[in-house]
Length: 369
Image (cartoon, rainbow, N blue to C red; front, side, top):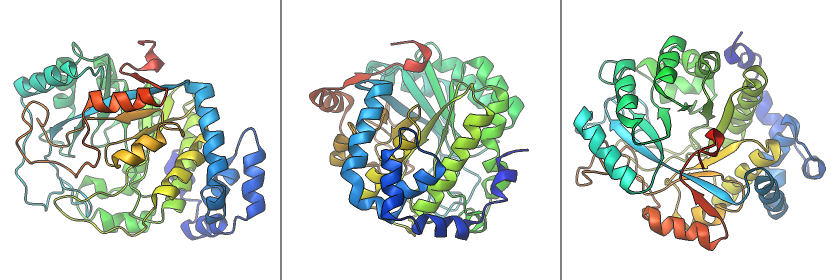
């Protein structure tokens, strides 16, 4: 049995109706609890919770400091390839988008690693398009071997793999895998992913089960905010998280909050989320799960990222490039999407420190601080 079997019993429309039916008293009950359950999470992401944002933020800040202290972990994405065999309606790497394609060679990977290391990072996130032929398991194994001398924590955000492939990568030194479902609306999922292996909803939603059985140290979840109703998708994602924590209890978990951004292929936001609502969502996750790592990328604006530091985020990227080889060779224009916060690492670290927090460049879960 996998999460797909669990999700098959849930109705998108019924779940949505239960969220939008939450009342002021449901929100107040959730805020009064020391520990929130899934029904409380529904209330906290519902429209009824919007007037309670200040109280949610206050509780979220206290709970985050209790578990993580005043530390913000910094990581950086390293894009190794923009080759992709999928057609996705929202992505600049989509097969039908006419952009130059590039996959880094060994020498280029090492050059990127040297550049990033000089920037102070010890936690790197490998990112590629989804192209099994050009960037498959053997390519990832080789990349991890090349990167291990430079970084103590290596994460992966690529196409879903099989259990045995994850086991091979873990043996090479892989610590974390991030896989975003994009949306849990199975019928509409196909509309957003009309061609390629990514169009297989079940294979993607079962990826975290394969990761758990492979024994991964940490796995990340998330939805692409904007594809479908963000409240319903977020409750599905929280349900997924709850299932995973109960089933693969030795693994650590993180949730990210990517919003649709402009890209070469263009995109259409179906369910917009305001900055206040995104803060509401972040705080709702913290009240739902004190142990959860909450991650934020440079998709968001500088002012938003500055304000969210104290409200629940524990892991954040900076100085990001979303094109292959973009650190050592920043002149090429091969990016996946436009980043918003373009401040360098030193400048952003200073902002963190000015708020009374400590920027951390190594992964606290591995005892490497």
